[in-house]
Length: 96
Image (cartoon, rainbow, N blue to C red; front, side, top):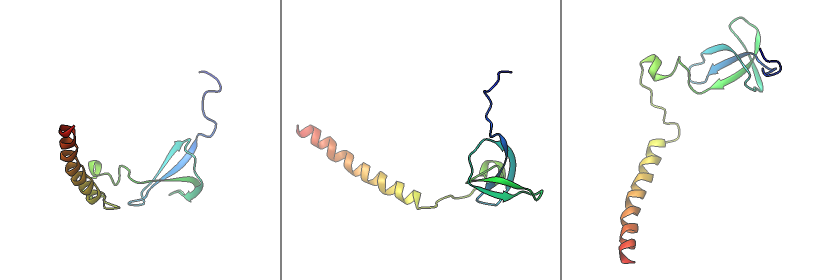
């Protein structure tokens, strides 16, 4: 094995799912600023994730709508604007 190619900060990190609070203790090099207690009562560096295998619809079989900031409505308004703009630009090209 080659020397000095592996990271020095490889340690157990507690990954916490924000949607349901599930915790996973995995060895990682991810940089964290906070700590949390694991199921064994020990303190570990903590990293929060938005979605994991315990909350993802593919693994759970439950469909879940994640529309935090009205993303669907924003998309619809943008698509309406682009459809309205396209004919105007086509007519402008014909006029030239």
